[in-house]
Image 1 (spheres, rainbow, N blue to C red):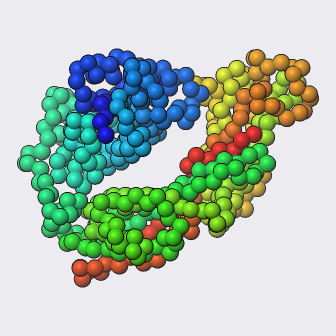
Image 2: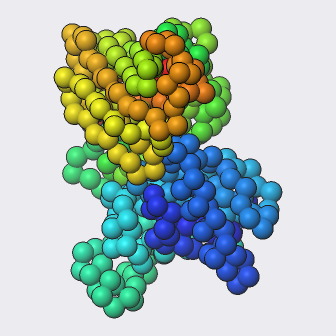
Image 3: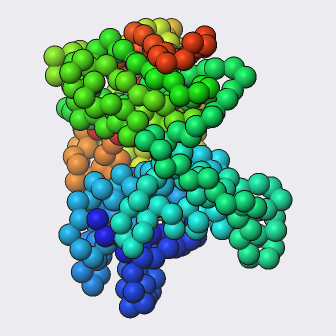
Amino acid sequence: MSLESLFILNTAGVPIIQKHWCDDIAIRRASLVVAPAFARYLASVPSLADAEPVWSGPQDTVCIHIQRKELVYLGIVSEEVPPIEILEFLDGVVQALSEYIGQLSELTIKENFVTVYQLLSEMVDSGSVVTTDTTVLRGLVPVPSLVNRVIENVSGIGLGSEKRPNVNTSATPWRRQGIRHTTNEFFVDIVERIDTIVDSSGSIISYDVSGDISCKSRLSGMPDLVMVLNRPDIMDDVAFHPCVRRRKWDEERTIGFVPPDGQFKLASFHAAMDTSPKVLPLHVRALSTRKDNVYTVEVLLEPGQCNGRPIEKVSVKVPLPQQAYNIGVQCKTGTHAVSNARSPQVEWNLKTVKSADRGLRLVIQYLLRSASAGSAEKGSAVSSAEQGALAAFIDFEVAGFSASSIKVDALRLLRESYKLFKGVRYVTMAGSYQVRF
């Protein structure tokens, strides 16, 4: 893989930081031509979610990006490179920066400017990715302190560490020798995402479940762990952390590993749900109609199959056409907001939807400047060519629930004799959850 440039942009397409691994001509091309063209492309799409992750840029370049909250991470290449490699690297950059400086935003990136540059310099060498593992990076780039950050921001000089970083060259480069903790704890988070498309009648058009197994390790010495899952047979396309012994997984379908110290992602997987029931924790029905020149969108929510668990952080986003005006919103539960950043959009937020909740309803009415009053019969369903709102996008989170029913059956400790305290948490959330009108 040969990555030429990396940009971190805000949602308006303005660069916050940029790093290059190419010659001066390619740097000028990326900064003065490609990045501005990509910013114009972002401005042309209705929402950032509609932007293609792989976009053909000017002058034989390819722009590959991901969006995480209010930031866009853009990689620029001019050679033939598998896009998934760049996407995986960009995701690793986000995880590494998050562990170093906490919540990522335009402000925190600027406050930790020197640290971000140092990390990017260690992650990539001459366009080739070296590592995004924070366990290795901690031995190369010191975690920023408050005093150093203030001095660096004022003087513009990176202080770095007072002593030379201790680079681990052992057979387990992700874990150094001599680690000691007063309490020995190991926590596991299995976070699953549901990607689905549901039509206006409630029928499922497409359905997919993927997940991550994230861990937080505070174990002394050099522990060897074995994790046993209840349904390893439905896990495919599994990507493991380098600490995992792949042969043990291939032969026994158990995960054996010497864990890094601190937080790390043990594995990511896709759940093969072909023969399993398609579980939707939240049922959403949506309908768009027209009467005279008034367009009406109605969204109905009901809790689905989530073992009675409360559904939290529920968000329903309904993009409207740019020609929409006189937008009215009605909802008795939760809060709503109308934004016009790119095109009109109505967002409905509910803190919690409980299993007994019924009749949750959002009604949106609006007019279209370009609409023709006589083009549709009174009260008839709106055709896709006439309606502006074509789909609703859903976000939610259910704690203590697994859509795939994958759970940890056992976690065994080898080599060490101390007592291990362990905890497992399951979370299911919406990935790309779309309900069409």
